[in-house]
Length: 238
Image (cartoon, rainbow, N blue to C red; front, side, top):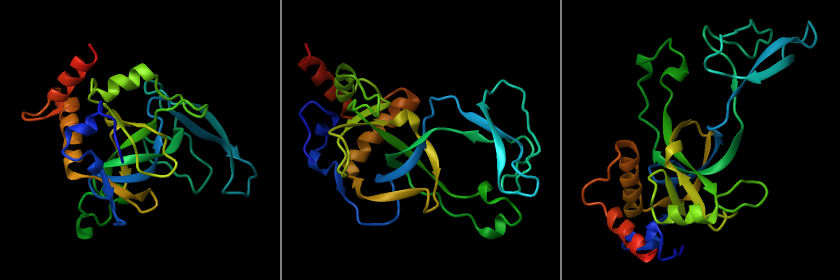
């Protein structure tokens, strides 16, 4: 991978080591993976059942879809479909989602001793991992993309939540934007994600950790090279 001179990748000693080969099948910190990621900025939808399509058919039903608003009264109906149960206080939520490249920020948590969770739902202790998704920069009709002026400011590290990058995978556009403000959990089940044959190098991931500290705690850690890079880019753009 090669990078232009005016991007954050240049602050590590070897920019070509931003992405390195990763031959393991398990997801670890810095792994590049594919996963289905919801459009979290969109209003979710909920669906309820009007009733079975046929009285004797238990796996099909007529569905009503409506926006799911947090301040609306909870309307939980008794569902006539055995495969779709709901517990008290639950509703069905639906988001549009897309398979995206993601950076693993934290790999799967340690498994809990089964003896401690006997009789509990699996969801109470099932391991998850934290990931941040990438979005394509180009506007190609299938995506909104990013404006060139906005991309330029992202490249120069003006925002902690956006990271300009080039992904070393087939099908990726020339540039992608990592959204650290969309850090989210996904299930650690093997069907929830696909590990790609690359991971972020140690020096590169330390830059991501600096950005996360800036984003979450609103300050960069002492000794970070990011402020010097920002100053250099400001001088360059005068």
